[in-house]
Amino acid sequence: MNRREFTLSLAAASALVAGASRLASAAEYPTRAVKIICPFAPGGSGDISARLFADHFKTATGQTLVVENRTGASGGIGAAAVKSSDPDGYTLMLSTSSILIANELFYKTLPYDPRDFATVGIVGSTGMFMLVNPATPYKTVAEFIAYAKANPKDVLSAHFNTSSRIGAAIFAARAGLTFNEIPYKDVGQAVTDLIGGRLTVVFLDTVAAAQHIQGGGLRALGITTGERNKLYPDVPALAETFPGLEVFAFLSVSAPAKTPRDIQEKLNKLVVETIQAPAIQPRLEQLGLISKPMDLAAVDAFVETERKRWAEYVKIAKIEKE
Image 1 (cartoon, rainbow, N blue to C red):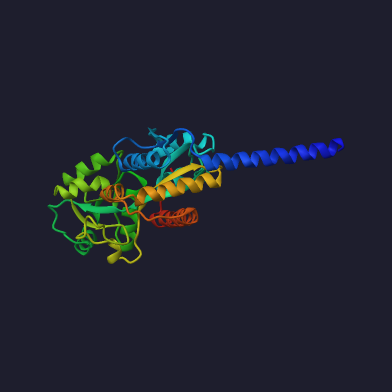
Image 2 (cartoon, one colour; image 1 turned 90 degrees about the horizontal axis):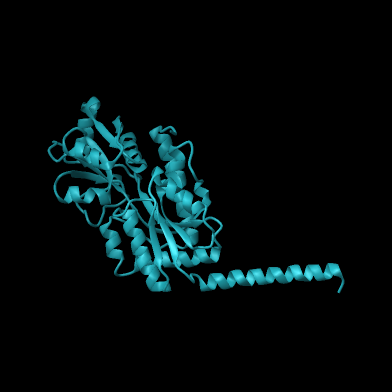
């Protein structure tokens, strides 16, 4: 064997060893603790979902999934940390539609590119309740629209995140209304002002809205999902009035984009098992999440569909990047 043949043989052998090593590592994954970064504060739906996934991960694999909360910059700080991690499946992210889609449409600069990530599973999606003060005379969507058209200068809406802003804007566009938008730094003050009568309407996610609806502090006129929420069967879907009106946010699990596909497949299976687990499924429903099992191909298609949908929403809402 001459030197050239020896070199080629050595290179081929190295490639085979490397390939076998990758296959072995994927087959054995995970062999140690895994970290999932949650870009949101403890106690919210994202944090709770991450911990439910961590519980099943431990049961299914025998390895610990550590939840690490890194908040700030609309999820950007946590996303940037995951982006810079090794693509080996040992650093994951509890991702959202804001991180993967909306932020890119709302902000000129981000500390990451949404395509830095591979979404391996969808935990669930949630719509927003259209909330008003219960002391107001309008008790239905039709009555609200009639009031808003008769009093256009008096209709004040709040927005405090991408979903609340888009929800209000799309409803207004479909209803032929103009809302006077007031930006808020956080949802708490917006809800306080709605209860106090200083706002007319707020679009709020199901988790944050639940206590106010159940306690009678706010009235839900509708929800932005395509169908009614099982926990609130008396609240109509806005799509019943405006067919096709659907605005929802989703929670998902993502990994760095270059994570091996077979490890992504394993993670996808774990997410699907989590949302179907008898002990976990009811808890996700209590969070207002609608969960449907999807394989990796379906997840890819879902995210791409939502990316196109949100781009259209932003055009309709005439929102310019900040």
